[in-house]
Image (cartoon, rainbow, N blue to C red; front, top):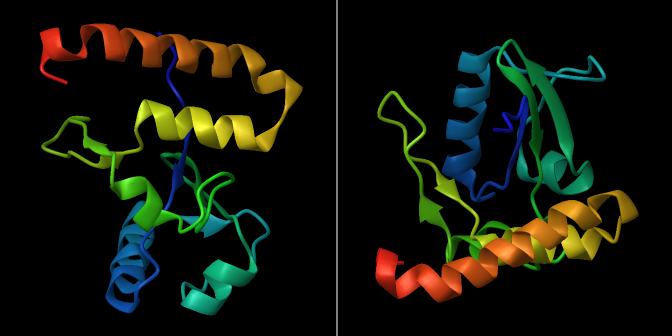
Length: 134
């Protein structure tokens, strides 16, 4: 099993959501990796993507528009699923197809094994989806 020590967040950058994201990041004790005070407003999020943060829980990047996803949050939420991660938390997680599209758009040679695994998983989801209620 692979356990990550970081996460990429693609937030809605509409006003109130950025305020809530800021509160959540404060709760995590997240600080910018470059030690500059973190400012969460639409201009900062758009001008400095990704915003790289660290917290006692691990690394975190705020990415308003990941590679291959014009529209960022609005593009990804259409096929996202809510996944239980413990303690009653069920965040929205990008679909396998969207994850593969983002990884492919980066065009990094080192990501090819991950991309091939995601494509294989997509095939399994298609084949077993009706059986599993997907």
